[in-house]
Length: 538
Image (cartoon, rainbow, N blue to C red):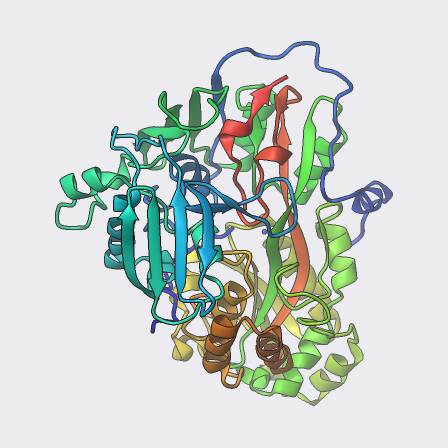
């Protein structure tokens, strides 16, 4: 039974506050818009120009891709058996290429009825015969998302539009795996066989797609340009926009200029706080704050200096004024997190972190430290503007409490390289604390607790080994669905002093006033992307 995640990098996904920003902080998070009263006209072109702020970093191969903004490609070209309902903050599973499903009483057997009349982009009809090759290909490629099919024991196909999937052990997250933005999607078995090569189709899928979605890939120039076009034989409602252009723009300032000039229709991610605030004051721009499962988190390095003490780690975390930080950095698009992980994954009263703000403990501790142990590095992911702001402000707070702080940016690839390397955590090149934002792979608590807290989970960046019995408890909770068991893992993690959830964070997007359908195209578990077939002008 496999219960581990690859550490394949998921590309990162970011004080005085003016009265105007504080007012924005009180605005409902479901939709924050400086909505224009009326648009005099709108372009009737069926071409939609968007952009990537940086290259997705991995090919748009759904069994390889495990990052953030590139979901705009993979999830508009490929579809799975299930998905999550758009335009709601709740976990609502919906059929996609399945039409219905049932689960056996022992939690091992999943039966799906499949949608008829669906074609892959190469013209192959979608039937139950596609599913076993898809699962096998995902396992063979063994990328970050491979764990989602690791418990599959067999796939039976009683008829072309019914599939029976039997698991090795009960898995209460399996339906969520199938609905995940990184979940197993349907790929043409004809194309898989034809282009397998020596790498299970990976070379072919760098520049082609073999999905069933409303769009197919027509251009993939790494670092330069991606393009999709509407699939004429798509089984669902035909999208208004028949061509999607996605140039890679090298910096936010250029992206803003092109947006302001009307050259691109929207900016979907990674805007700075000041940029978002400016757009919200403009009546000619529609601004959105849409719910996600994203959390801004402080990770503490238990392997360095005085932080080897659990009590001292908690003293540092209690010196962080989350209320002030969130008000200043995420006004109107984030709230102080009462729980230890992404909002909504585990119901109250479970999952609470209960770490108060009390800097006096750290101030007293610092007075007892030798000068050499007062040096303290706060790191952040250089691809995340918000995280840089959090790191800078936390560094200033800890400096005021007596530590000698410096703030350092690290490349995403370097951060992922730390996973599993305890010796690196003890050296001078790694931070005492890392600020990074995180989202789970699904709307299921397992893909938070396992990924974040388990050393084998993939996002244990700073190698905290202070969560007792984590792996066994997670496996037990996965099989039983016990919230009490998950809560035991969470309480152990909170008590360790290695993590602090700072904020629950929304997706901030801005669009031209004529681009409609953005909330209806957004899914809470799918960060930084939209279902483009739901967009239209108006």
